[in-house]
Image (cartoon, rainbow, N blue to C red; front, side):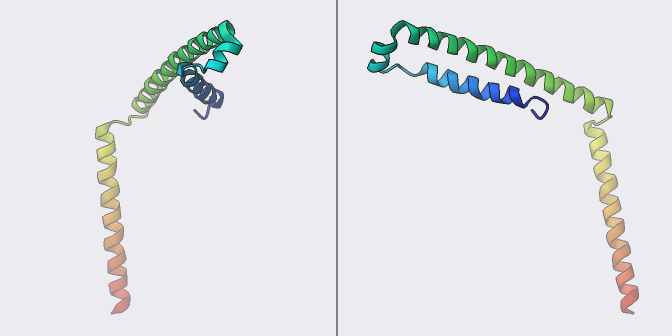
Length: 107
């Protein structure tokens, strides 16, 4: 979404348009706008549907691209577990060394 902020805006507009188009027209609207209103609502529904399809396509492409990049960088569940274990051992070592240094200073 950082790369395509306009797409996010278009999706929001499409959703809002779809919601507005799904509402029943008022009697005044029907009297004043008639056929033009019906045409505008149909175009709004078509626009909202097309934007929703595009958003779904972008989301699917994004998900696929993220998965591919994660694999390319060897970011797998096993590698994450291994990195977590290594980080945990390092933190434990730092704590142990710090405790020993404090003990030696206190003696």
